[in-house]
Image (tube, rainbow, N blue to C red; front, side, top):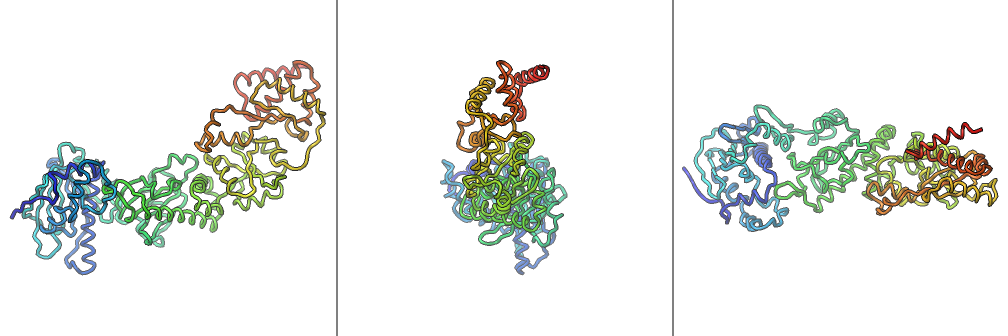
Length: 608
């Protein structure tokens, strides 16, 4: 028996249109055909479970085979199969209707192709991207059903004939076109299966072995899993990565379906290199690792799997569409991550502190980019001081309240971005009983600004941005041992010795044991420059401005008495020496200036 007919579409050839508009990557054909085979297999399993199929299910699996001599790829399943009538219904009519609308929409332009997922059963037709002929040999699960063969050469004509097939299920046989030889290589097929089919819920057999894990741990209940299960799965996903810090098991069925596992990796400061490590699946079929619409940007630093049948995809399943369900999923994931971090913090603060150096960039990034995350994270974000102790924001405010409130009733948080380079300033602050925070991660210049915006009557100052008395200003003035004329003479001596318009000299009454010369960059200017380097702050012009510094001369230091009492060239030499020592203490002396300083040091030491 042979029946011939036309596929129900009003065009000479739908397949060039499918090739042009439906799939950008030809390897997708294997994902589509194997997914169809898995669907057919699961359907017969469901029918057996409800008593509609009473036969022997046998070992349910999907087989993929490549025959290089025959130039064929065969995808076989022992699922529900089809009758000849069902072939005409499901294959020829392309999901019952709408094919002509599809063709008209895409014949001349891209159209709105993102809107048609689910309207057309076009996954099967991806086979014609790599094949110049496709056969289906199938036998329905229904009692007494006769096997049938469907053949099509990529035109709208098809043929249905009798076939020989003993067992229930379908074989889809692709006769590979001359321009698609790459898909006759077993290594190429294995790579595609590993990419898209690694976790399909039915065993996939290729070259005599099952190549997938049909029961990945995200499909199981957390109560049934151990820490080792989670760690081993992470190793399966990322074989060359360090073990994760901890993880979140996602499992929700209302108002959307979502499962998955998100891991917190050791991200440290190279977070730009860690992106695109979250994989999106739909019913255990890999879709993409471009998940920026589903996952908030700051959570892109996480690793793991998200699986949801409710995430809207375009017709080729290649791109996500932003809609209300995506926004809900996005919000849900943010909340789950914040809750997990808060839970760890409350239950095991010691562990949380140990992991802080690995996750602080991630938490701060989240606080900067998402107000809802900030509201939760402000209770567990940690501030570390130079002594290595950790504090919540509220704990830290209580710690410094008494000693670091200035004359304007503002709380002053002092911080360092480089504890070694700024050691002299840190030591001076600690000698006054001040505490100094370490804020030295790649994102801290932005985090500092956010804290000042969010915290009432609180300001942050880098420890080297002012002289010690100006960091936390009080209504108390120190007496100067110099009169006004002597101050002017001292200022003039230093200005002449420094001879640099970007160094603004002032004389101030500091403690006698403070440094004779202190070089600082004003907090505002340095902060704007720092933010400009990391691509923020809206002050791009600051990056082009030369560095300017304040040079504070300590009127009460004995060395400056010597500068005043020196004569001629010696006065300038001593002033310059004191200034260069201040530069040297901040690693700001180099090149010819450093060479001159060394020579001058020897000369001053040998003078009687």
